[in-house]
Figure 1: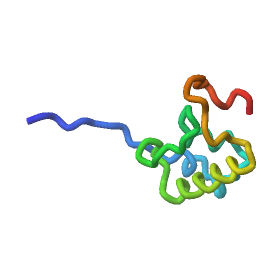
Figure 2: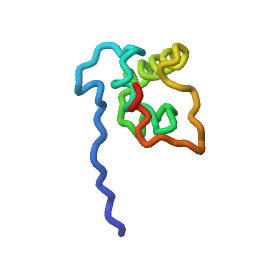
Figure 3: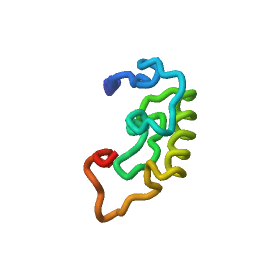
Length: 86
């Protein structure tokens, strides 16, 4: 029988940092939940708890509305580090 794969447990970065509220203006906190194309990463990939994932989603949507984070990124010019200019 095949051996079970042992994956490391994913911990919520926001719970470890004891963050009470995720502000849309703090792009350093939001970058952990965004992919290189500025898509919101799912909980199963980031390890974020449900409470913080909901706060992150609201904060990212507000930051997009205020133009702190772009809605879409050009598919041909994908930036290696999208937070360099912020």
